[in-house]
Amino acid sequence: MRALVVYSSKTGNTKAIAEVAAEAFGRDTVLALIAEAPDYHEFDLVAVGFWIDKGHPNHEIQKYIRRLKGKKVVLFFTLGANPDSEHAQECLRNAETMFAGNEIVGHFICQGKIDPANIKWMRQMVVGGPRISAGDARWGQAAEHPGPDDLIRAREVFREISLRLQ
Ligand SMILES: Cc1cc2nc3c(=O)[nH]c(=O)nc-3n(C[C@H](O)[C@H](O)[C@H](O)COP(=O)(O)O)c2cc1C
Image (cartoon, rainbow, N blue to C red):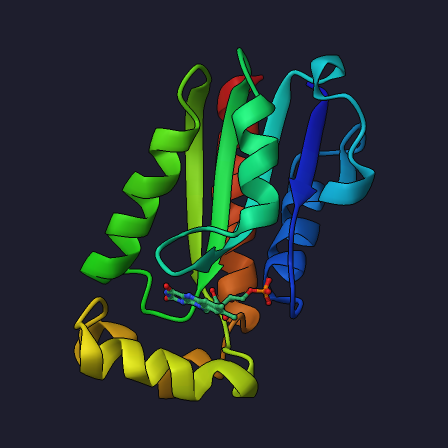
């Protein structure tokens, strides 16, 4: 199986997960930043990684997702909130909708530390919203992610998908 892992990452959290995905999918996998992505038609599986911007996939990756059609896809993302939160589930639903016309064969969600320049703004989202409840947010915990346990979990999820598709 030939896999393409394409991702967008502003501060490195999603990049760390993309690197694990590329390793887990095997030797034939191509890992590419979105700006340098090769033609996806040449691949059996396309894994698309992004970060959450106000509840949705970040803008740069949205353009890519809209062009993607007729593929088996894995989506993965990082976000400031707890991956088990209702907010994270809403983000997943928002993302899945954008992948219409493809077959989603798996996903992975990981908490990711928030750029200090944006923490104030993120807290305002909680107070003013609450688009993200304080319990869901757990901003303090985000600083620890992605950590070693996240990378192990990511590897397990991507390996399982890879084995299932062989
Ligand atoms: C402008 C902006 C908007 C964000 N919106 C959300 C959000 O709606 N929900 C959330 O949980 N995290 C949000 N975050 C946090 C990022 O999704 C998170 O830090 C992510 O891991 C960053 O990934 P990266 O290091 O690959 O750029 C936001 C961050 C920024 C900068």
